[in-house]
Length: 169
Image (cartoon, rainbow, N blue to C red; front, side, top):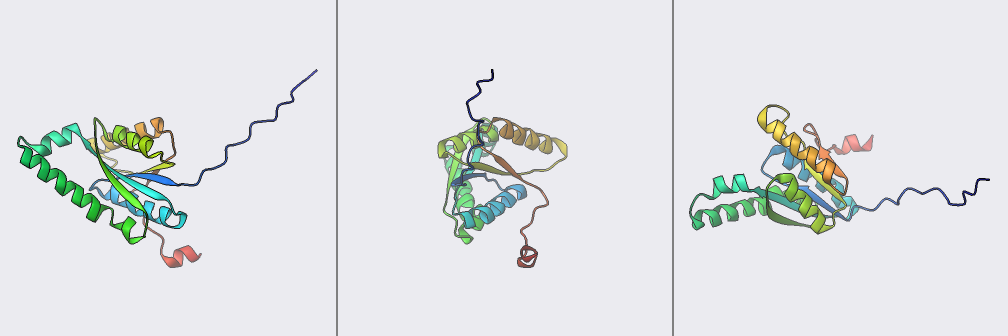
């Protein structure tokens, strides 16, 4: 006799995208990710946490040997983050904040920020596909997608926002 009285498990209810973490740098792929995120977050009322990760290798090379150089470089980087890189979010009226974090790798820093922010999704830009930089970028995004506890959205290299005419179709 089959005594299966339990109901089948239902799919979990989709959660709204309350908080989205976007990885930010000076790269074109990062700028596409920020712009894409602004198009997503504005109509949904999502909050965006932009994270710029300072890796120890980059930090060592940029900081130099004096404390004055270190403070100046960091202030300049934060000003770029706040005033330039996040402009699409501000222009779209998206509630956002930014964080500069130190980590061994970019993916480690993004994952830590996403956990701390209780993010519902992570957005990254797809980087170059060729050469050493492409392999490093691919490895980082691959680790992110495998270790994240939330969906990871990768904005493709060729993404551009739709024009009003394209949206009307």
